[in-house]
Image 1 (tube, rainbow, N blue to C red):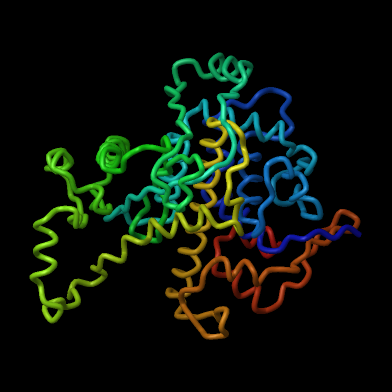
Image 2 (tube, rainbow, N blue to C red):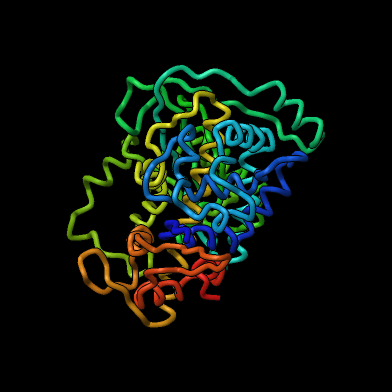
Length: 399
């Protein structure tokens, strides 16, 4: 009998399957004859690693799947040894050369449709990610030739970021950094746009261009929300025909004067449902996730700008899958009029997906004489699985 640790990874794999991520990646990224693991399956494996609740750097990647049902989770014939650093690196190169922003947007647009995500408002923010050491362009000539010959005119212009010193949100001015720009939906904090930028970029200059780029790519008439970096004289001219919301920065004297003149007694809660500035923190929560070492290493470990940019795509896809799962979980609880217990033992309709993941520790897949069976599926775990899409349940042999 073979016993492997399935834990919560069946939920993650099912969410990946629900949006057809593997198929989309394989349509966008060239698959070479003779490859044992397709680019889509490699990306799926990376997301499983990223949401595995502990960090496993790229060069230790095969070890993450030791003791786990790799073939059951990823695909028939796929073994942990196939997911070596060379294979992962080549896929990261292919993702970069195909066009990271286009890949992410293509996947998120399908997820928005699949899960009926509301995009009445979208929220933009940026953050810095710090790195250590020196970074050089290490994209192999072979990778360039391989992609160019297969994709021809479909190849997107490559914009390599500059990893350099800049204003550090992490309060580490001694480290070089790069920027990550993220747009999330107001409904469920679903990331819909992801971009990497050089470490010394200015939000004031970049934000309106990002909104413009996003508007040109999608057919959304969304209210665009961003912090006070959006509010400049030049940006206001560009945004005349847009719907936007921001805060006037206190660097402007009229804003300082008004703030001093308004009495605290005049500050009353808004009567508009759901209208309060703190909703903007949704996007910031996405950055907390991306920097959380419990989900992926909090320092980027791939020593080339191109692969760092490609790894940010993987981080963004981890965030997409996580927030889709959390939104689906909470929506199902509200729809059913049910609650689950949180970490404090109190009932809630809004648990974190991380907490639910932890409830599936010590769930095993048993294989004996070609037959599969799941052990330790308690009544509580069975009830939780009913809150997720059917592909999630399939990994626990329930449908």
